[in-house]
Image 1 (cartoon, one colour):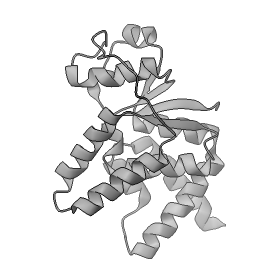
Image 2 (tube, rainbow, N blue to C red):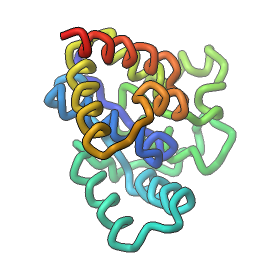
Image 3 (tube, helix red, strand yellow):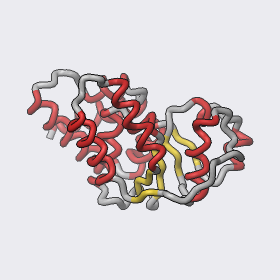
Image 4 (cartoon, one colour):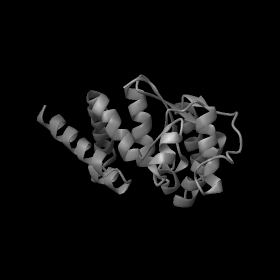
Amino acid sequence: MAVTRTLPDANVLHGRVLRDWLFLLNDETGGRAFRLCYTVDILAETIKGIRRARPDLTGDQITGIHDKIVTLMDERIDQYPAGTDAPVKDPFDRHVHAAAVAGAIDAVITSDTGFLGLPESEKDALRYEIYSPDEFFLLVDDSMPAHVMAVTGRQLAHFRSSGDSSTLSAKLRAAGCPGFAQRVQRHCIDLASH
């Protein structure tokens, strides 16, 4: 897998499971698999989504999450138009398309049905690919399974130390990544046998 410029949508970043896997995989590969790009718009939506899901978080905690996301991203895209030419119907998603085009993005990672449900002819006309988180993580595992196994080991160690009894694969299934959950389950079995 050549280094791919990615733009994860807010719906990928606001959930901790997907966000952690994305950042850990980027760290584990040393940025050799993909670069994580973002915009202020996407970051604002991400923080809004986290706040809605976790109204119990303090201002310090929200600020900490914000700052960590900014630190772990590789590049911010600032210059992009309003996206009125976007193929998506939702006007609040146009900025993602505009940033992807202006930022020379290779892959938009999103759970948004407005993007994922585009007709193939419209997807083919775009300058970037559209992947669900599950599809993207499967591509990373296809290309760099040893790195996915290493992140699986890191995740297992973290959850064991925190006393979390749920499985990595269950968390991934709940986050909408059933295919990747199966792969991670196989990595867990492989790690247990070593």
